[in-house]
Amino acid sequence: MTILHSIKELVLKAGVEVNWYNPAQSDIARLFKLFETHKIDTILDVGANDGGYGKMLRQGGYTGTILSFEPLAEAHGKLVDAAAGDTAWQIASRMAIGASAGEIEINVAGNSTSSSILPMQSSHESAAPQSRYVGTEKVPLNRLDGVIHPFIEQSRKLLLKIDTQGYEMPVLEGAESLLPRVHGIQLELSLVPLYEGQVLYKAMIEWLAARGFELWSVMPGFVDQSSGRMLQMDGVFFRSLRLEV
Image 1: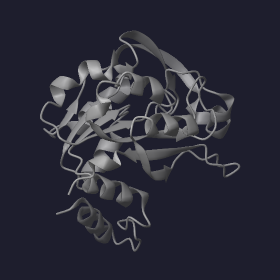
Image 2: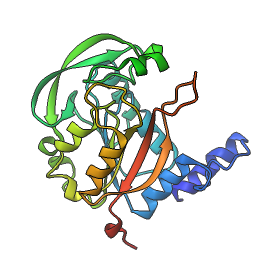
Image 3: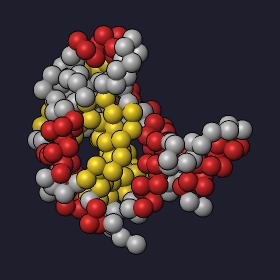
Image 4: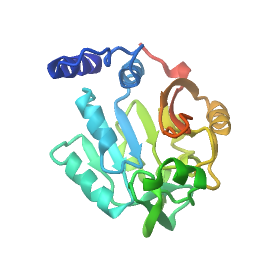
């Protein structure tokens, strides 16, 4: 059964009459269609939080390998629970991923998902007051290309998913020697500054293009409910020359 058929079956069982499984009308269905088109078999989930992304993948029918990274103690515990019993979903020990190795302090947000190594801008706090920082945790820091190779020796089709709240560029810089093996990248693109020192969407798209990645799809993300302005979206990039049939 294909991923899209699995999505359709889930929707029909729920009795929901929507085209959620249609790639032309659903962001999630389009994402899974891209995975199928590019034959993605391993997903590196950096900034996995409590495992929501991995659970979405499994519910949609993705059966390939998932390797998740999460630095925060509480979220990491929930992530381990989410992957329990799933032999194809591996959880790395608690660590942050960046451009160097060592130790770093991460700011813990009230809603957990907005936690970041970077200071938060007032624009973010105003749009989502529940995201204000409530504490910090000191965690190990590693480069992705320094810890990943033992896990992916047999992989053919890698997708790197990054959800690190403004810290996307250091993650990419710490994966430079790995990127030639990566076929796709999914990450957050900020339209306005939300965290101090982050790289915004135009510069990020240009950086990825210089390394052979083309933007294939976007997915709406963080929206300021008071104004309706979109502040953040997900971009999905692939190497077009690696499209194989």
